[in-house]
Length: 101
Image (cartoon, rainbow, N blue to C red):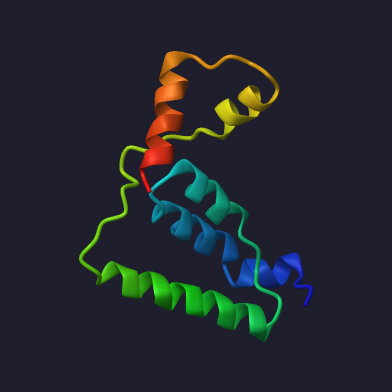
């Protein structure tokens, strides 16, 4: 389903994306929310709703996801993948992300 820019504007879809981005806990989540496209068909909408239901169920569980201190490490990983040496602060950020889960 291709929606015109006028249709997306009428639906205020950009505002929906912005509101979603404000509810994220990480920079990666914010970037993903801001890139979110309009779901093109019923199957994808149902799949997304199922994921949302699962996330809401997880919020009722007596556990906390350790996302509070995580920082964006993708640039560091990209540099390391090209053979660059990481700074100590970058290594600490990568270590924190690895052990967060």
